[in-house]
Each structure stands twice: as C-alpha cells, then as structure tokens.
Length: 253
Image (tube, rainbow, N blue to C red):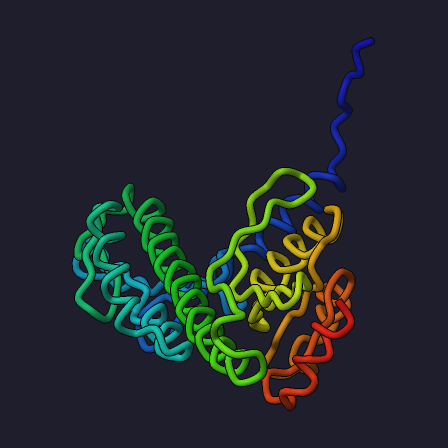
C-alpha cells in the first residue's frame, strides 16, 4: 500500500521551530557565540565563538572544554587527549582552546561543527579517564579496609567470575573464608559506574552458589534514584562503616 504524504504547513512549521531551538546564537562584544545541541559530560551545552577577521573567521571553543576538565580535576589528562583529537580532526589546540584560524564563509558551518565536536569529545574522554582513575583509587582504599576486616590472605584482588550469561566479570576484591565468598566492588556516583556494577551483579547473582555481592560507595544519598538500581542485586554500604559490617556479609554468605 502506498501512502501519499500531504503537505501540512503546521507540521513544517513545528519542525522548523524545533530545529531553530537546537542552535542559538548571541552577539557579545563583537563576537558571535553559537550554542550547539552537543553536551559535555557535565550536562552543559557546547558553545563555539566566531570572530570576524576581514573576509575570514576565527572559530574556537574559547577554552570552555578546558574549564570543564579543570572542574572535574582532569586538566592534565585533557591537554593530552585534546592534542590528539586536534591532530585527528585537522584543527589546532594551544593547551587551552580548540580553534580554526581561518575559515571562509563556505567553510564556516563545517568549522563550527568540527570545533564543537572536538571540544565535546575531549571533555567526555577526559571525564571517562578521570572516572577510571577515581575507581582505581576507590578500590585501592577498599582493599585496605577489607584487609583490616578479613586479613590480606583471604582477599583475591582483581578476581574474575563467569556470570550466567557466560560473560567474564572483573571483581575488585573477592573475600573467601571457609568456602564462603563475598564480592566487594567500589562504585562511584557516576551513572556509568552504577549501571555497569548493576549489570555485573545481576549476571553474577544468577549463577549457582553465587557469592554475596556488596557495592561500596562514598555516600549513598549522593546516588539519588540510582541507589535502587544498584541495590537490586547487591547490598550497598558506605566505605566508612565499621569492620563488623563488612564481616557480617561473610557470616551471612
């Protein structure tokens, strides 16, 4: 059956209006600032500055990506990541901002898109690396806490467990005493960390003689509604609790 599309002026106006809201442009001190639909890991929109230089244009992120990285404590990581992205995307980076020195009128749309994409990519990769670094630090602190509660000889670091889906999962610390096991994992408040841990615990929970599963966080309140996601197949405790709380999970295993 062939359905003929009928011209609908209201439909086209709705789409045009929606498209117009995706990109905003504001003039400040002789420069134009283009707010794009792209978002940084923080949730802020990527903004690109365009300045006129004769018949050509200077396009840059005017250091907003750098500021995002500073805010998350990843400035050094960002500079290394951004340099590689700039080389790949054919733009320039001066340790502070992505920029295109000269763009013609015809090149301007592509230059704006390339700078916005480069800035977003650099920030999001930096956020991921910062999260990974924090996760390693958190798991190192968790190990010391578990060593105090169970003794180092009863803990396997960087263990692996095959889940019900036959996926091999990495476990930060697996405590084993008298054939009873508890898998402990440090989890940050970042949604990616929570969702990954929840998937891991869910798969492991479905195997025969599954170990007890404990997610260790800094602050349960900081997880918000994600606490329910994480606690579905694991117990959730804060790292600062007393050793007896850690030991209680082994006693119940």
